[in-house]
Image (cartoon, rainbow, N blue to C red; front, side):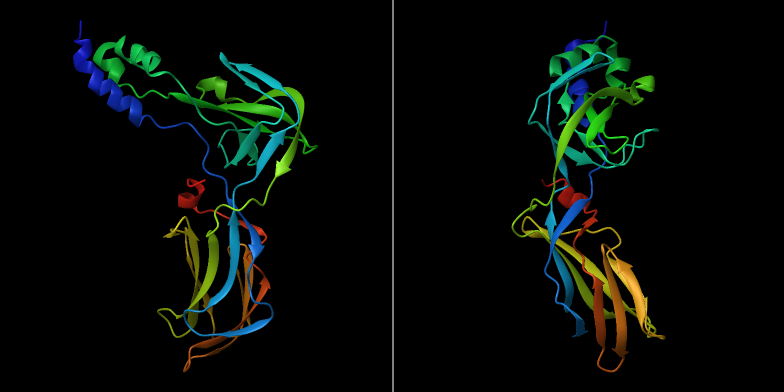
Length: 266
């Protein structure tokens, strides 16, 4: 019989390291534009457009709901708020899903399950959380299906639920300093193109934005580009002064942006 006390540190370590079976973060909502209007002449370093960053969308439930799928029992009450999550990757589930907070198994239950199988059991990765996500398959303003994220095998299949009305909550500010900006960087590595950078700021620091730099050719103008949620047209460019004449055809807001670091911050 393995020494249970000797296995305890290993089990605790693996329990803490077990990945949480949750969908990726939903895109943040850009809720307010702070962009100058009309045609601009900008030098390198100038902010061309900016928008306030809001939380991912949420929903408030208009009724009660009891779920019991594969032994996972949960009760939702009228007025409960569920947050949007990213695509689950489960077949038959749309990208727009709204999920409860994660449900954690008790430490005692987790350790009992792992230690009962000795060292092999302790070394077996264990998922300790599940999360119900609701979605509106036909878009009629009522949730009609759910999926249990973290379930195994066929337990991951979506299933029908009694129709449940909900109200959408959108446009809440992520933080007082949360801002997405489009900055003109000037020429970048080639005389035939100029660059623009997306920059996200929030909770007191700059945050990493996936694929922040965008290049626009200037050999033939005008040139239009879609950057994030915005549409920018470069009308003219002076290679000697590096001044660009630009126009925002569609501001950064309203729109959405994926900033993983900020998405975890709310």
